Length: 262
Image (cartoon, rainbow, N blue to C red; front, side, top):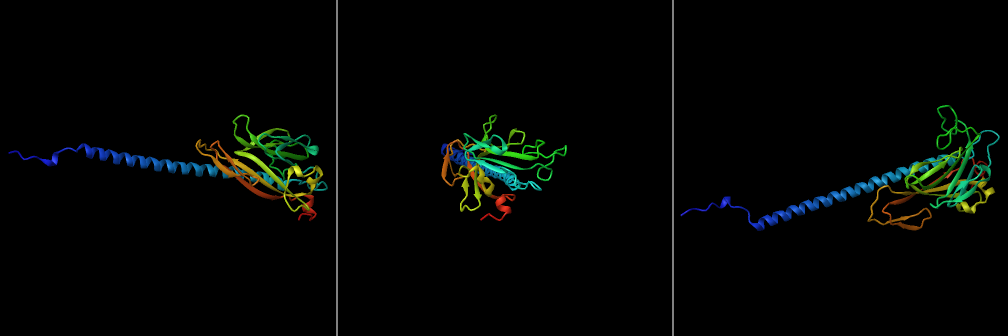
């Protein structure tokens, strides 16, 4: 009688099915964990890019506002050193500027100060420059800022128009610029539309807000955020959004230098 060798028998169909099911479960769990980690990394990287864009924009705008009205000597309080538009960009001549509406609903800001190598970065030729690095031959630098979608890429960007009337994007991702100003004797910050032309001389500080749109796209994500007005908002384009604020003192404002700021 032959003895059966049980040690060499194969796996049963049930054992194979269980092994395959366990293997699929492990693979599915691993893929889910990887996708979750990758999504978290992408969100963190996108948030970091948004913070970098906001920091760059606010640093530049803050430095420009601090320089507004800088003019050594007898011209210390120059005409129209700061002027703004609500939901529009500044157009026209520097001393008689007006507003042109923007589809982005961004505010616009004009800043003027003395053109010398102290208040600007000098060019390779040793000349003062404007916000886009162009040489300035006039005695005063005039820079105008606003945000809109780029005509070439469609991405929102912070633009600056320099003294030579050339406009260039300087910070990508800035969807909207919001400017609220503080006037001498006013208990609250004011929208640009609430300040008469002659009232800009009394502005001694500004609250600037930038709305930054994220760079990564998640088609399934609806974004909820708070806009620059403090109102809840949402977007369905799959892009994250966040607002960033900064308050800046206008050092050369007549209201500041005369002690009229409250």
